[in-house]
Length: 191
Image (tube, rainbow, N blue to C red; front, side):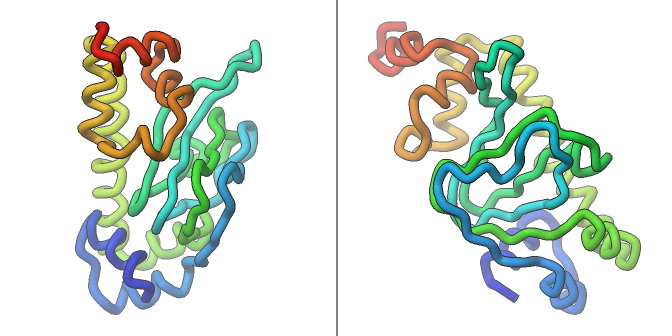
Protein backbone atom coordinates (compact mmCIF):
# COMPACT_ATOMS: atom_id res chain seq x y z
CA UNK A 1 0.00 0.00 0.00
CA UNK A 2 1.21 3.47 -0.79
CA UNK A 3 2.55 4.97 2.49
CA UNK A 4 0.78 8.32 1.91
CA UNK A 5 -2.60 6.64 1.37
CA UNK A 6 -2.08 4.44 4.42
CA UNK A 7 -1.15 7.49 6.51
CA UNK A 8 -4.32 9.34 5.49
CA UNK A 9 -6.52 6.32 6.20
CA UNK A 10 -4.97 5.61 9.61
CA UNK A 11 -5.11 9.28 10.63
CA UNK A 12 -8.90 9.06 10.51
CA UNK A 13 -9.27 5.77 12.41
CA UNK A 14 -7.27 2.52 12.87
CA UNK A 15 -7.94 -0.30 10.41
CA UNK A 16 -6.66 -3.90 10.42
CA UNK A 17 -3.83 -4.63 7.98
CA UNK A 18 -5.98 -7.15 6.08
CA UNK A 19 -8.62 -4.49 5.37
CA UNK A 20 -5.95 -1.95 4.39
CA UNK A 21 -4.62 -4.43 1.83
CA UNK A 22 -8.10 -4.87 0.35
CA UNK A 23 -8.80 -1.13 0.35
CA UNK A 24 -5.58 -0.60 -1.58
CA UNK A 25 -7.02 -2.64 -4.47
CA UNK A 26 -9.83 -0.11 -4.94
CA UNK A 27 -7.87 3.14 -4.90
CA UNK A 28 -6.33 4.55 -8.08
CA UNK A 29 -3.47 7.02 -7.97
CA UNK A 30 -4.12 10.09 -10.14
CA UNK A 31 -2.09 13.17 -11.00
CA UNK A 32 -3.61 16.36 -12.35
CA UNK A 33 -2.19 19.76 -13.30
CA UNK A 34 -2.91 23.07 -11.61
CA UNK A 35 -6.37 24.50 -12.46
CA UNK A 36 -7.85 21.06 -13.30
CA UNK A 37 -11.57 20.89 -12.43
CA UNK A 38 -11.81 17.75 -10.34
CA UNK A 39 -15.56 18.13 -9.97
CA UNK A 40 -17.84 20.32 -12.08
CA UNK A 41 -20.93 21.95 -10.63
CA UNK A 42 -24.12 20.15 -11.62
CA UNK A 43 -22.51 16.70 -11.90
CA UNK A 44 -22.67 13.94 -9.30
CA UNK A 45 -19.56 13.41 -7.21
CA UNK A 46 -18.65 9.85 -8.13
CA UNK A 47 -15.34 9.68 -6.26
CA UNK A 48 -13.86 10.23 -2.85
CA UNK A 49 -10.32 11.57 -3.22
CA UNK A 50 -7.42 11.48 -0.78
CA UNK A 51 -4.89 14.18 -1.61
CA UNK A 52 -1.30 13.11 -1.14
CA UNK A 53 0.02 16.51 -2.20
CA UNK A 54 -1.57 19.56 -3.70
CA UNK A 55 -4.16 22.22 -3.01
CA UNK A 56 -7.81 22.59 -3.99
CA UNK A 57 -10.69 24.97 -3.56
CA UNK A 58 -14.39 24.24 -3.28
CA UNK A 59 -16.58 26.90 -4.86
CA UNK A 60 -20.12 27.81 -5.87
CA UNK A 61 -21.03 29.97 -8.85
CA UNK A 62 -23.79 32.51 -8.23
CA UNK A 63 -26.56 33.24 -10.74
CA UNK A 64 -24.57 36.34 -11.71
CA UNK A 65 -21.59 34.12 -12.58
CA UNK A 66 -19.46 35.11 -9.58
CA UNK A 67 -17.49 32.35 -7.86
CA UNK A 68 -17.59 32.08 -4.06
CA UNK A 69 -15.03 29.87 -2.32
CA UNK A 70 -16.37 27.76 0.53
CA UNK A 71 -13.41 25.56 1.56
CA UNK A 72 -9.80 24.64 0.82
CA UNK A 73 -8.04 21.29 0.97
CA UNK A 74 -4.31 20.66 1.12
CA UNK A 75 -1.78 17.84 1.47
CA UNK A 76 -3.04 14.75 3.30
CA UNK A 77 -6.68 15.84 3.07
CA UNK A 78 -9.95 14.28 1.88
CA UNK A 79 -11.86 15.76 -1.05
CA UNK A 80 -15.48 15.21 -2.08
CA UNK A 81 -18.75 17.02 -2.34
CA UNK A 82 -20.22 15.09 0.59
CA UNK A 83 -23.97 15.54 -0.12
CA UNK A 84 -23.46 14.73 -3.79
CA UNK A 85 -21.26 11.69 -3.07
CA UNK A 86 -23.64 10.25 -0.48
CA UNK A 87 -26.79 10.78 -2.60
CA UNK A 88 -25.18 10.52 -6.06
CA UNK A 89 -27.02 13.72 -6.93
CA UNK A 90 -25.77 16.75 -8.91
CA UNK A 91 -23.37 18.81 -6.84
CA UNK A 92 -23.87 22.48 -6.09
CA UNK A 93 -20.12 23.06 -5.80
CA UNK A 94 -17.08 22.62 -7.96
CA UNK A 95 -13.64 21.47 -6.89
CA UNK A 96 -10.65 23.01 -8.67
CA UNK A 97 -7.01 22.10 -8.08
CA UNK A 98 -4.84 25.11 -7.26
CA UNK A 99 -1.54 23.24 -7.65
CA UNK A 100 -0.27 20.21 -9.53
CA UNK A 101 -1.73 17.45 -7.36
CA UNK A 102 -1.41 13.75 -6.62
CA UNK A 103 -4.59 12.05 -5.44
CA UNK A 104 -5.94 8.61 -4.67
CA UNK A 105 -9.52 8.04 -5.87
CA UNK A 106 -12.12 5.46 -4.94
CA UNK A 107 -15.43 5.22 -6.77
CA UNK A 108 -18.81 5.39 -5.06
CA UNK A 109 -19.75 1.74 -5.75
CA UNK A 110 -16.36 0.37 -4.61
CA UNK A 111 -16.54 2.51 -1.50
CA UNK A 112 -19.97 1.13 -0.61
CA UNK A 113 -18.86 -2.41 -1.34
CA UNK A 114 -16.15 -1.98 1.33
CA UNK A 115 -18.63 -0.42 3.77
CA UNK A 116 -21.01 -3.36 3.42
CA UNK A 117 -18.26 -5.95 3.68
CA UNK A 118 -16.24 -4.63 6.63
CA UNK A 119 -17.65 -3.40 9.93
CA UNK A 120 -14.26 -1.82 10.73
CA UNK A 121 -14.41 0.20 7.52
CA UNK A 122 -17.94 1.37 8.38
CA UNK A 123 -16.62 2.60 11.74
CA UNK A 124 -13.77 4.32 9.88
CA UNK A 125 -16.40 6.07 7.71
CA UNK A 126 -18.26 7.34 10.78
CA UNK A 127 -15.01 8.86 12.06
CA UNK A 128 -14.41 10.43 8.64
CA UNK A 129 -17.83 12.09 8.76
CA UNK A 130 -17.24 13.31 12.32
CA UNK A 131 -13.74 14.70 11.71
CA UNK A 132 -14.05 16.14 8.24
CA UNK A 133 -17.65 17.14 7.73
CA UNK A 134 -19.67 17.71 10.87
CA UNK A 135 -16.92 19.61 12.68
CA UNK A 136 -15.89 21.66 9.64
CA UNK A 137 -19.45 22.63 8.76
CA UNK A 138 -20.31 23.67 12.32
CA UNK A 139 -17.10 25.71 12.60
CA UNK A 140 -17.66 27.40 9.25
CA UNK A 141 -21.23 28.42 10.09
CA UNK A 142 -20.19 29.75 13.49
CA UNK A 143 -17.25 31.66 12.00
CA UNK A 144 -19.43 33.43 9.45
CA UNK A 145 -22.05 34.31 12.07
CA UNK A 146 -19.92 35.34 15.02
CA UNK A 147 -16.39 36.30 13.95
CA UNK A 148 -15.25 39.58 12.42
CA UNK A 149 -13.42 39.55 9.09
CA UNK A 150 -10.10 39.97 10.91
CA UNK A 151 -10.90 37.09 13.28
CA UNK A 152 -11.88 34.84 10.36
CA UNK A 153 -8.57 35.65 8.63
CA UNK A 154 -6.57 34.96 11.80
CA UNK A 155 -8.36 31.64 12.28
CA UNK A 156 -7.70 30.70 8.65
CA UNK A 157 -3.98 31.34 9.21
CA UNK A 158 -4.05 29.09 12.28
CA UNK A 159 -5.66 26.30 10.25
CA UNK A 160 -3.47 26.77 7.17
CA UNK A 161 -0.32 28.76 8.10
CA UNK A 162 1.12 28.78 4.56
CA UNK A 163 -2.16 29.43 2.73
CA UNK A 164 -1.06 32.82 1.36
CA UNK A 165 1.87 31.07 -0.36
CA UNK A 166 -0.43 28.53 -2.03
CA UNK A 167 -3.74 30.32 -2.66
CA UNK A 168 -4.40 33.65 -4.34
CA UNK A 169 -5.56 36.54 -2.19
CA UNK A 170 -8.69 36.75 -4.32
CA UNK A 171 -9.62 33.17 -3.41
CA UNK A 172 -8.84 33.81 0.26
CA UNK A 173 -10.99 36.98 0.30
CA UNK A 174 -13.86 35.09 -1.33
CA UNK A 175 -13.63 32.35 1.29
CA UNK A 176 -13.66 34.94 4.07
CA UNK A 177 -16.68 36.60 2.45
CA UNK A 178 -14.89 39.96 2.16
CA UNK A 179 -13.46 42.06 -0.65
CA UNK A 180 -9.84 41.77 -1.66
CA UNK A 181 -9.38 45.40 -0.55
CA UNK A 182 -10.63 44.56 2.95
CA UNK A 183 -8.25 41.59 3.07
CA UNK A 184 -5.37 43.87 2.07
CA UNK A 185 -6.25 46.26 4.91
CA UNK A 186 -6.40 43.38 7.40
CA UNK A 187 -3.03 42.07 6.22
CA UNK A 188 -1.51 45.56 6.49
CA UNK A 189 -2.76 45.87 10.09
CA UNK A 190 -5.19 48.68 9.26
CA UNK A 191 -8.23 46.86 10.65
